[in-house]
Image (cartoon, rainbow, N blue to C red; front, top):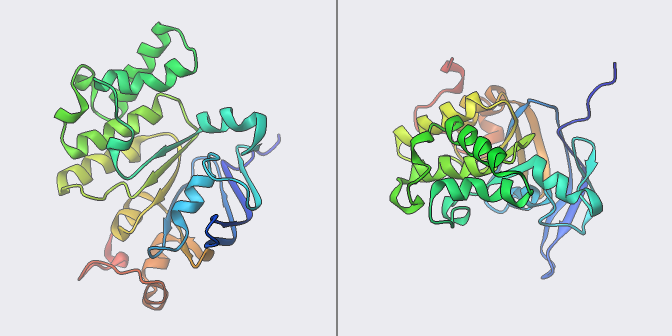
Length: 249
């Protein structure tokens, strides 16, 4: 039986912006189906630049990116963008329709699906993020944490294979943080999470990658990386005061 291709494959990815700033210097990353991986690193490490290559928002540098065996280019780009859902840091970047239900329906309608199928996907996606009762509500009437979960639903309605989250816990109160974690833990997808929130990385991702200076400087079990004070200090990563990753179940 043939082995399925990795959900995400990044090989020797280098990229410079038009102003000459080199953001990535040769990133290699392989994520298997169903894996949950956190990308850690200081500001300016290249994390967002890497994420924007995963569905072709940025292209044109050196190296290659594949999603489930499909190159992120040319005729495969539309299918790649269906398979890779990116949830940005600010949910208001993704919510622009009069109601929650219309926001979640926007992607499936653009795929040309029938209205009964669109309705099924909206219901399934909202149920998955515990927002089933919010379909008729205006997004701006929701709390920040609720809007972030709806932003996740707008991506889930496309039935992605890979879910990419940029700083998912930022600006959430403790209850919103817990509610989002419960949602993410239950999703049957490959997960890539960019975060400065090291306890959240430990809670949600068994594996972490540290990116700094446009290259991968560490890749291993999250608990082991977070228990290495020299590694954290070298790359401006800090645990909350008193937090011991070895003591967390």
